[in-house]
Length: 339
Image (cartoon, rainbow, N blue to C red; front, side, top):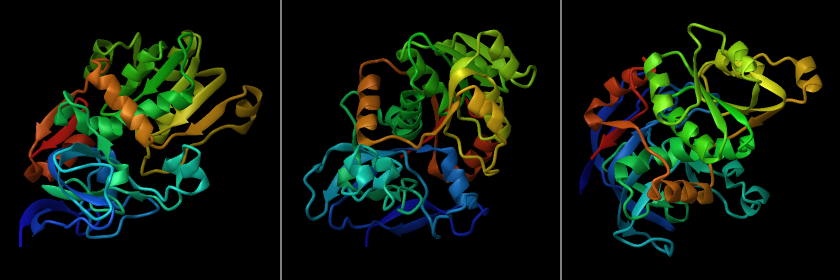
């Protein structure tokens, strides 16, 4: 029996174990992918800790930013072939026939299965995936770049889309990290003026280098007041995993502004005033990753040289230390496991 190395969650909140497991075999509609790279998303940490109301079944192999080469196709697969480089994203499976799937909102499908959560993920040398839901990585796009684009990229690209960002808009990005550094770039591609908010000077320096027009250190000043002095945000996208950041983003909006919820803090609640929401015509929008079409567009933009992915590489054996680095805010943007 052929074996592979994988990082496994056996108990919520406990360190992951590096184990030798049998290489899985693709079933109907699936492919087997030999991993080249796998990004570390904060969602993986939440999954391993069992932070969210719907917990993943254990044992769990996390990871939904997997990039690799198809080495075997299962019965009925027509979408990909052996030798193709593909991405294993968060949306691992959807039914394809419900109202949401049929209307371009497959990410809302109630029968969806998520990679590295309900399905075994990409923290392994091999992983299976449903062929219909993998992303096709264009030639010339590095696996190390493609990994963060498969979640951080497509998630923030969709968030900028639903924010309605336009060339005349001021868009506030709360949280400059794995997601935020890409959100800044997509908002600039939309033509908007961008203000980036974070607690760390180095993150704000990164934001400036990626095109942010203004930066605000929320440790030293109230970002809502600072943004109001700029005229108020037409749209605010919250990528910071702290409810306070959501509340600051809300207060930064001008009348008619749009607040996009993206980050998923373990503390699941924010306080939003009803009176001001109604009188100021504020919209609050939840945005969850993106569709296969969104992912295709993200890869196309990167292949065209429109975006830059900031990451550092690690080995899978270092996974527990990597979790600690991310939680301590010591990572400039994204960590990527290189196989």
